[in-house]
Length: 408
Image (tube, one colour):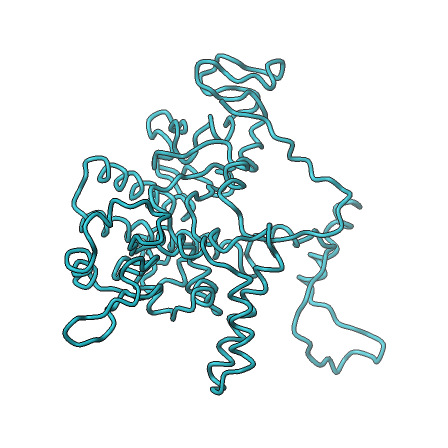
């Protein structure tokens, strides 16, 4: 059932703060979960239920009319149809109402590990290459060393790789620790037990590391390093990391480091990513619909594979593909292999629709209606007097068109 929200912007504010959205905030602003990749039914031309254009989530396609037609006209305003679940209201709400996709596994937001400075990398002290290998399911990262901490190889006396937090492990090294180094029953210990060895891969591991980070202690360590370290390079690195840590400390309550890892993805209102019918029964669609569809298809497939208890190798590959699909949705231009359309053109992602002169901010929010104006190349006119200015005929006709129409 759809619920009402007060979308009125209060006029008594003096600043706007832009911060990370928590999963709770995304859910609070959502009107329902999108679970199907379908857009519209190609026979009836009506939006599919629980799909990317669902009327139950985003609102009716016709003013004051539910999907099944049981309630029509303004007198039923605000009623939620008991048959189709669509609220009887204006169709313009489809420009405002957002939905959400609940992911089976967490994914990392591409803005925070593929941009400069690398926010996640600086917080954890990991280089970009190592961070990528964890996020894309190539290597394990030690979240909690437990009993393996400071454990050494008996024959060489060297420390085992994986005996420290943030150590990266290959598949063979991880299995070697599980099979040969851990005492019996270690895997049955509770995750909160400090003796338990925990190593994970993917955004889930990064989420655990970010959630357990002590910003105050880390800021103190980085300050000491920046003042006492003899190497200039390490000092510079510590100062760069300190800048990110301080930004999170100052915005405590507004931003949390673990919110850079997403468990819920917002779905933009359907009128901002339209599906337009063309001649011959074909449709022109926004690129965002294709990108959202890829995410939903892969998310549903992963959910099904987990239910049937598929092998780890298959699950890992599917999780990596889900991460890549979400990367393409948020910023397709930043990926090494961008998702392309049938005409071999890179699809426009959410970032592309926001940035630049044609983006949402400069084109739609800051753009204003202007008076009639024109511009052209300045050239010399020997026949003109000092106080005269020549104007091209076409330009003059266009500029004075409203006055001519009024006279006529």
